[in-house]
Image (cartoon, rainbow, N blue to C red; front, top):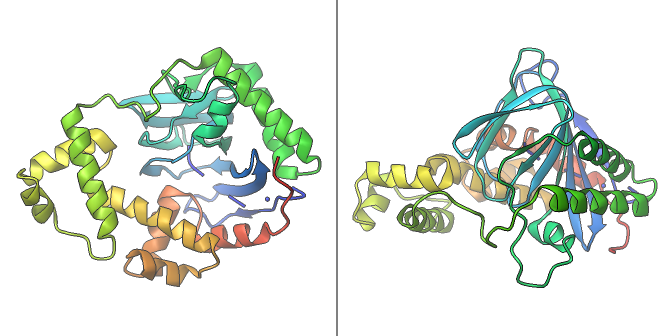
Amino acid sequence: MTMIAGGSGTSSRPDRRASPGRDDQTLWTRVDGIQGVPLDLLAARIGSRHYAPHIHEQYAIGVTLDGMETMRYRGERVYSSAGTVVVVEPGEAHTGGPAHPEGFSYLCVYPGAELLGAVTSLDEGTAWPHFRGPIIDDRQLGEALRFAHRALRLGEDPLEGESRLLGVLGTLVQRHAAPGPKDVPRRHGADSRRIARVVAARLSDEMLDPPTLADVAGDLDLSRYQLLRAFRDAMGMPPYAWLAQHRVTRARALLDAGHRPADAASLVGFADQAHLTRWFRRVVGVTPGAYRNSVQDGIVRRPAS
């Protein structure tokens, strides 16, 4: 599931140009002041679009409203029907799209690990909540998430929205979480993770003029095939896709700060605005311009809790 702008501190705008599908609609909302940090919300109707493999820095916690979603997560194809809850952990590569031609709709919230960990009321240093699988058949929880999402998006009573959200997160953790490591859990070997970290750091550092695959492989004393396999095993996508998503993440920060899409594209290394737009839609689900407008509309902010 993928992810924007703010209540007395909310603003939102549908983007009907988010994909080629006639029925595709994406509504991002950002709410400020949830435990001192912003919280992104998503409401979407997906008719034909399939999200490219991507990761989130936060948890993605959603509920399917109608239809059926399919996604690839931790190497498996999974399905979410109406009423079920979907949880994607930070750093886990995944896709998403309609399982059937009639499409599907869903709501999603994107709390950080600190927020989700805080609802457990455990001692500092306790592992962040871990979920063994992404699909949770808990219709009562799904309904509670739907009401919390609506209260947060409308922003008519910020206390109600925040209270409902924390109640949902607390119930989710108590009923369905298992202890896990503080770092995002990985199934892959330590060597693949090490290689991927080195490659990702270099791609990030040289984002505007990235090295060739041969250069990176040679510096690590690996063949290009060995590097590709290790990176894909650890990250769930090849280096070029990781770099494109990293650029999108950096572009989002620039758009948040008020930069125009064309300027953001240049500053993060995309060839032009059209190149940024293609990847932005694949990862975020809306155009950079629609994203920027929604964030700029959220100028009224409520005090942090």
